[in-house]
Length: 111
Image (cartoon, rainbow, N blue to C red; front, side):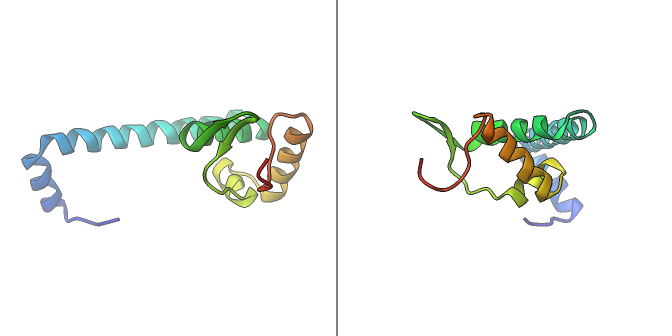
């Protein structure tokens, strides 16, 4: 990350309007994701939030395989808990319940 003084940023954006457009797209996308995350945190129960976040991660970082989609990135339950605004213990119980129902599989066993 790089911090630019406002005058430098303004000059750069005036020189390259395409950069300004892309910056606006990125800001809008981040605002949309933040708004959706806040809505989920306020309205959705934890299993729904966990499944939704895992689905997003699968879309962005998943590899389709014979047994479903495998994430290419390592993900701990602690990291998942921070992503969905819950405790690791609650996410642990939720992941266990989802795994018992066959909704997800977890672990690094190569299966």
